[in-house]
Every structure is written in structure tokens, then in C-alpha cells.
Length: 71
Image (cartoon, rainbow, N blue to C red; front, side, top):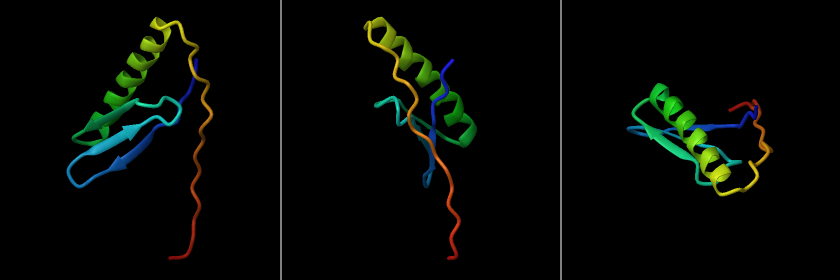
């Protein structure tokens, strides 16, 4: 089992998501719930493609944190 960081971004009319450790693994949806479902599917398809090519599955190496500042 591998756990990958997913970055979610809210746009003006849609949501986007990408996985920094899996270049090219992206999804766009109408709302947060849709993009979460789509990025999960995208990760599974992406990893299946890597396996089919006989390549090693990348290890998760990206982490995130939040920093609070006065603004």
C-alpha cells in the first residue's frame, strides 16, 4: 500500500487535483467530491500503466504542511 499526496485547487468554475509524485496524474471536476473521485481513479490508472510498462512504482516522496502567519 502506498499513500500519495494529492494537491487540490479550487478554480473559478471547477476543482483541479494533481499528484506531485506521479507526474501527469491530474483530474478536474465540477466540485471537490467529484475531483476526489476522479483523482483516485486517475492514480489507479496511472499506476496500472506504470506496471504495464514494467517500470517500478514511484515511492511517495512529497509531503505537505500548513504554516500560519498574521495577515
